[in-house]
Image (cartoon, helix red, strand yellow):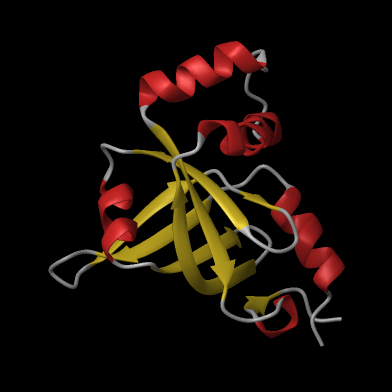
Length: 141
């Protein structure tokens, strides 16, 4: 049985998720990204000019790996991505991403302007399985 509470505490720490998608030519595309997990979905920031935007616009399959190389723990999650281009919807998630990773807290108007200037979008990944069925190491109860 998986200790979901311990796994959630691990994912709440400021760490990257390796985001994997499939390029148009079939090769994998992997990048480290900040993420927030709300208990149901993962939220990841990217921009319209990045490969991830093109990849997940074409093929919604996504895999995340969150690891701790020193503690020999990891979580691997398969799911599907959707892209939200609604800045008003994404604002609270962009703020949560920044807060989790210790970035300066801008006021809402300043952050919205930055999101628009950068062409920010929100990748929202819905896991394919419930948490107690995720592939993991180090979170057995």
